Length: 352
Image (tube, helix red, strand yellow):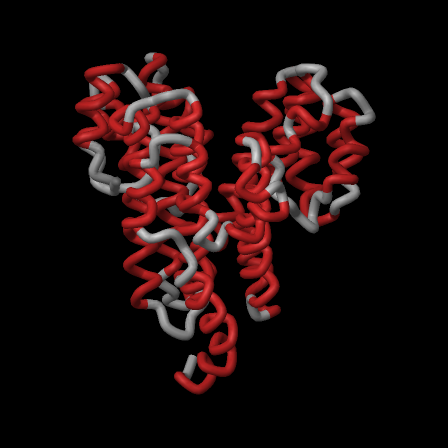
């Protein structure tokens, strides 16, 4: 595409994305939040950021911790949906494919609530506002009081009908909600894999971020399998193509490693050596996900700085926003439960 063509296609959306990027929380402010003594101190800091309007909407400086979670979700939903709105129509299917994870997470929260016989209010704080699955639609699904009924109800959304059909088929076959949710994840990541190929043909740098996302998912799957002592053949069908590493190469690495730490330490697509050391100390698998998300965050940040007049600027913003919200929630919860900064640092996807 010529420079003129790129300017016509992405000039407006990229300008808006850059403006939104300028409102992301800086490393300095995030460190101040991590150092805050209590929730009220965190609120005072957040009130000076882009979260101001959402906090005001849900109670202002007198907001409860529960409502603060609502406010963070509200801000994220508004920003991510805004990115979808300003994306050129020809590319909107790709953005929708990327942010589908939040729509599917909403579905998962509802299904979990049904299985636990909880009301919608028990999970509503974790719901990300979405035009695809508005609150009223999710509550209608919960009134069916069954997993199958909820999935059939949500299939009214044509964009997700295939994914939900796969989930329903798995649930009917196994009677296991985890199997249904695993089917949703598989379909989502398969769609991401197709987007990687589409973006690679355009030579768009955002293909790299999506490949890293797929790779992270594959590695987490393999690490969990290695911990359980499973053979590669037992889980190879769960791996998604178009990650950074070929699945056959991951298989060779998996089969030649005798432990979780040795497997993780030898991975080339992510540097997991420090995470492997943390794992050896406490046996926490979360250290691997945190390390990979941090590396994805840094890659997104670099690409966002370099991306000009491209689809990549929109993709990178989404990943940066996701990390920001993940980190904020960890810091808020950590302070609420009285964890030390060192303990919290092990839970966040940010170099504090």
